[in-house]
Length: 451
Image (tube, rainbow, N blue to C red):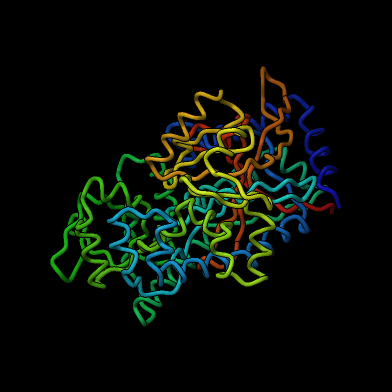
């Protein structure tokens, strides 16, 4: 079946102004009551969740399963070769930490892919791999409950079956599996969710903390500034921690506390399990997409892995003075990027929240060339522009439901860096879809079919 019939039916329900008004009021109340805010802004601003068919969902899940072995292979090769690691542009402190054995197999037990999936054409593009501190899994599950309580959803569910796709459980499973592998026996960890007290994602930490405690696992939200280590036990304000659910960004931890921070000391000594571990930085770098698509590394991947990469990862290169292949043609990288800015986007190799991203088709030539010069002195990648899908989503305007076209992404959460388990969706009326950057709305995704 096509999902368009379900979307049309949903929007028709909202032509009832009273139902739209009531649903908006419930949404606002639920968001506030559940703490579903990010930096003071409500996470959701529209009245409809993302609706997909089972067939559409399976395409994303199957592609992800075929794609992740390519990431595993490039990581394995990078860990074995200092020369290959140079392609990832690791900082010296990162280079000193990636060799630390995390005590489990996956470099990023809990991670998230950021796809653009056009539900109409089936085209899929992977533009980023958040392999360090992916946010949103607990928010997603709370949003599932929030939307299921909307009056319009209750009415819609009379004729359409909705199946939710929770993501929090996969994160927890990956954390605990990594802990068991690290510890060597099954026992209850003392979990510390580690990040700065002032970060906007703090409300999500509280959701995770509540769930961990509900399943009988001690869990505390802790700040790196409170860490102490005596050579045997890592504590935060006197509370011992044996499993770090790392939400703090490693480069911020180094900037504020140095590469010899006591947390790193405890990890090096094997006295605490950290998820995700420092070696996650290799895959988290946007240069990982460049490494996978660069002709210099063709020999590293199998034919099956190449096919998966080619099916979804756009042409990406680290910005440097060199020649390279672009769709079968050898080009001078800098000259070609300068002459065809409308085809490319520049991204910092390791940043978040949309910071530093320059969309070539939105700026003039002088601005683009200045950005290219900056990219030569600070690690950047240049990536081919991809199509960003959009569809109409309703929100309440002056007491009536108004449907506005919004761009959307598809962000599956990965378990053990191997397979997807549900995904979240972000909406925006701007080309940069990112909650941190102020991008419009986050909504849960439901599988839908007629009853």
